[in-house]
Length: 294
Image 1 (cartoon, rainbow, N blue to C red):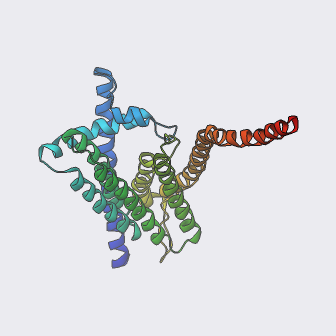
Image 2: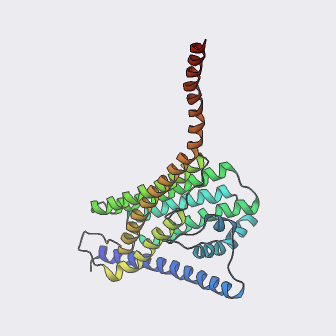
Image 3: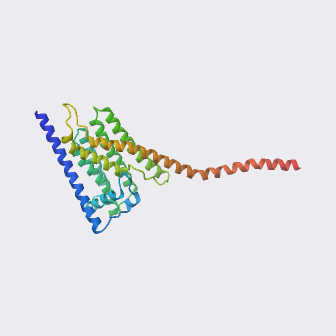
């Protein structure tokens, strides 16, 4: 083994260790929540009740996440850390995740992406705890979400530069992600209840972060690329395919639902506008009849 190969092997092992540590942490939180379910029942949150789950990410999993993040949110609030500071930290870790992916460090990327996603959830929780909710804060939160997601997928596009088909898959995942978010924003701007659908931000984060995490664990065991080639990371590939397909289908369905709601809202208005035209058409006949009788 050459010195370069040995260095690469050590980096891959470090990636796997970080990913394995993250996996064990997630499993520990899940085990603690199962104990909570047995003793006290489900942890209910207003936001998870409002958002609901989907067949790709159940409501119970979302409640688990919020329950696990609650102590961290309370700690950040007690340290007088503002929601905006949490949002900016989320953006920084999102950028770091994309940078790590661009050079093939799936384990480091998974940790950074997990921290970015956690902070994305925590900024809203801190805002509610400290009663610092604001429209400007929601705008920053939504903006950070889009940039963090772009960094992640852009990193994969750079990493798969020798595989145009995989780059295209990542581009479709990016397109679907942005179109789902766009449909929600468009519905809110038009005062229509945004359709729930699948592949919202929490689902995409879970699948993409999970794909990076599992890739770092499986690459040393399942892949032995030839010299000069890069590992594919098959769990990452599966996650990309799921997001690319499900997000674009969800985006089309959501936009169709919004269009139907707009047409249903405009129908009564259209009928109201047509009524004067009918009256105008009848009125000349009546006038002509009166003239004839004279």
